[in-house]
Image (cartoon, rainbow, N blue to C red; front, side):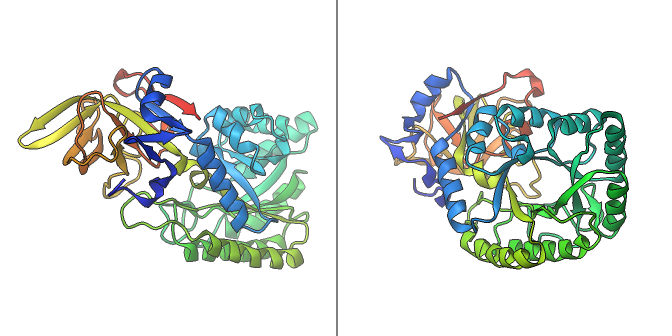
Amino acid sequence: MKGLHAALANFPVENGELVVGGMPITRLAQTAGSTPFYVYDRAAIDARIAALRNALPAQVHVHYAMKANPMPALVRHVARQVDGLDVASAGELAVALDADVDPRTISFAGPGKTDRELEAALAADVLVNIESFREIRLLARERDRTGRRARVAVRVNPDFELKSSGMRMGGGPKQFGIDAEDVPRALREIASAGLAFEGFHVFSGSQNLRAEAICEAQTNAFELVLRLAEHAPAPVRTLNLGGGFGIPYFPGEQPLDLPAVGARLATLVETSAKALPEATLVVELGRYLVGEAGLYVCRVIDRKISRGQVFLVTDGGLHHHLAASGNFGQVIRKNYPVSIGNRVDAAEQEVVSVVGPLCTPLDLLADRMSLPRANEGDLVAVYQSGAYGYTASPLRFLGHPPPREILV
């Protein structure tokens, strides 16, 4: 696997083929029935969760952020190993409830929750992360109508950012949460509305590989909550510190120093035991749990040479994997790790561009990348594809059929 990212060690190679869940990639393609497809490895997910549990204090609860990958079979598998699920829509809530978990371990976040979504959350007795004063008013109305008290936490838009994060979800003007300076007023309205206050949620950013930045953000979030807790109408029972744990995608990136994050959380656990004795600290992770456990696999259907440049045209592309095409937030496009899955260790290499079947130059899975020489029928594997793949892509673009998803 020379030249591929170190994180790709999740998938061994036998007889020149990638092996996932004990099956070589050509057999997986036969099992799928057609290409393209996503495949997720249970063992890789299990190993990541075990490593996380080993590094973090036992008192810290781990929640799975379903937005990363809401495939029902995968959610059920992950749910058995974590302490809760975090959802961001009524659709995700339905999948979470079908996963046979205690509804009280589910939390519902996201701006712009509809009336029906709030009604569904209240009926299911899940924790609602309040993101606006409107949500307080709507839940108060539902309390008057049904007699049920919504369980709520306040999502705080902090006055700091998670430095070096792929996406900044807090600090400055944001659509997420309630600005920290307005939280005391929100807490007063929650009390007067008769809602069941349980805690706070502070999510300041995502996809961060710098342990020191994550530790700083967690410390800042904890200190902010200590100040806000003075205005709370009830003891803080849950403090969701968000996530932000990143995975390496590109050359030169190093895996997150998880023990360093765990050590900092241990300090916060000790402080919390004295300052917030009823509170449980929570980290909310999605990509970090499942991102490296997935592959996107498509097939070469044409090999073309245009003015000296080799193009491998596949039956998959940005309509299935928008992130790998570079059109899901990248400022400067970089190649995801890619291999020819059935010729991983072939000696003959060449510089090629891997493109999809769509009528747009944006349909690019690998740009001028050195790969084993491939022919029609060979399988292209895109790594780091377990998160923000299938459901984060424009699946109906140009009318091509969607890929399958397999959990092995």
